[in-house]
Image (cartoon, rainbow over all chains, first blue to last red; front, side, top):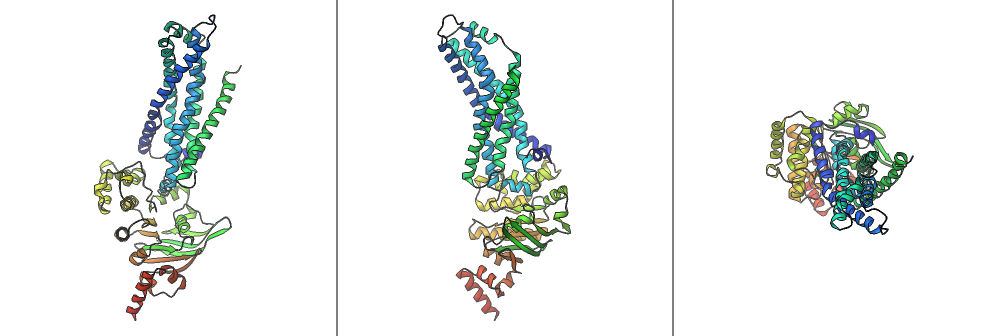
Length: 234
Length: 255
């Protein structure tokens, strides 16, 4: 499948339009839900941390610290990717699967179009912008934590920001974006594979979407474990 | 012209095509008929290159398909127009975008040349008003006509149609049949139609290939099919009372 995706490329004038469409469907179309989830989960992380800091000796700036670490290291790259496996993944599998069932992929092949390149390559390129989505998720997660912490009366703005800046390791950002890039490849290819090679009718399109979501999620969790072990353990 | 020489195709233990040889002529509507499971679809898909035959040759105007390089095969496919059973229109594109698709992919036409050609073929299939509609917004018969327009927009040498009348009312079926026949004659293309529809056989069957259990059981035209005494053909084509009566009346007239 990989070889065919890059083989016999579609004309650039056509491919350009396909990439823009995929950016709109996959990236722009995901911003709303990502923003909503990130903002509120960031807020919940801050509140949970604050409510568990019962010892008065533990400083309040830990709320900002814990929010930053949770959001940047795991929530934004990994858990947003699992949510996206459901949103983007099922969209990719069902749209390609429906094209398979309704012979649209056969039509492309009969015309002499490399259907894998035509269908999957634009998704791969569009998902190169996926780290941008995760960057927004990180920002809004922390913003949500700050608002919940400050306006909920759990900490002051200065303390929260102090916690955000405390023991900041720039490599953690690199680690998060390396993971994000790998997850973007998984999000584009696993659902495409399940859609492209599915057999059957409408019922099987639904089944393929579910299977694609499960496999994408499982793969993300496993790759997350391996990358964390490789990149963060000393 | 497409020559088929002794092609065989099996799926596992099941032999679907058993040494079929025939010629599909240019400028004529060539029909493949036969019961379900007789090998019609496998033969059509073999002609399209979707299935590779186990043995035998398919020759497109002197070009042996199995001897072509992948690039030559891809180039040959741009000479093929295909009308799928379910139309297979790209549902994210409008009617005009669907028809323009082969031009955008395989020609260097500029925007106005593409638009002119799309307008021309849409006019040819009487769909000029459906330009901006999505496939889901038009009827099954209109979808078939869009599929025909898309198949002929790039001036194909070969036109393949898989059950072009399935799911259509008799009147629309006749319109589609006549359209395919007119286009075949107008552009002098080799048209191969896979059909179950006996009205099509009687209307446009200039060269009819009858398959039974993966074997060529009969070949002829719509006049010959009336008078044939081939039992398998008579049993299949005249299975309905209406067609039996039509045949009897026709034979009476001949006497």
